[in-house]
Length: 396
Figure (spheres, rainbow, N blue to C red):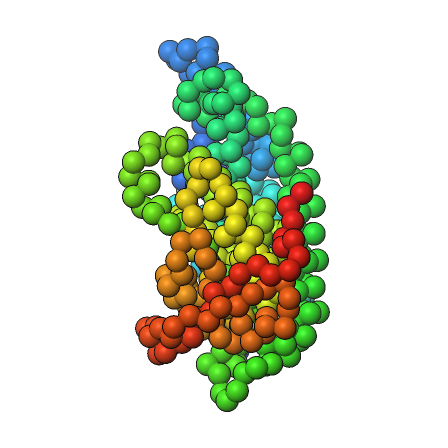
């Protein structure tokens, strides 16, 4: 990006801060990052319980935001030496809505956070594009994490205290303050551990995986330019759609949670990474063909033996991928998805090149199946993967 385009993009290197009107900050309408109105001090005919709820919510907000909302968007942008357009791009990356010029929506902690990102760019430690991308990753991941945590706490309150969902959500406001510090500490701890693991697999061990991926491959491959070699797997629950139509909301939620928890545990124990779950399907990766095979067989076996969950179709392909925005892309991912649809319930399929990478390993048995014509790939040769010698992946 050249200097003339900086302000048109995110303008983090702007030298002259924008001017802010001299008018004093007045109390005005306030909105938070979820577009919900900030609770005003209780007045008039409100009941004592309602007043207590509002005061508790206001106290929780002040604690979480690090202080009272007393800044407008132009003031925060000016404090960081940015145009409003530039600041809004960063806020959008974090998942914030648009605020009006008169909305008193920001705190001093918002100002400090914006300054942190801007300082990284001005010091040359991040480019403008990288700053937006990293910020968007933080916003999207923490948003999903918070929704998950809130729903887990509400569900636990309903179960443990025997109250309705609505009552549990109200009680969360008063019970959450005692959990905030512990949850924050666990978040930072987990992020550091995950960052270390990510550096290991995405940087230090990446070259070895690429060398391994070349074994058994002849000619030019569609995935040759892609930077990472991984075992890519899909597991898809059989008859999930028809089951979900017959279940009430609570039973369906329990089934989905059981499916996700079992997948996460098996993939983690096998040294893989759960990329995402979409309803009845899970996408995962592992660093070696053998690790991917062990995880795939363990998933298949777990669902076959489960008394509640239906069987699963599983497929795994070893090849190169592109990792972006927390997701993975490339022909290897597409082929694994296609193979999943070809697998019989309770079985695992791999392609012929993945089978070649596993054929000398006594832990696996490989049974060739008839060729299949697969959209986008032409004729492929599926191979059924079965457990061989050894105990397979062992869960504690």
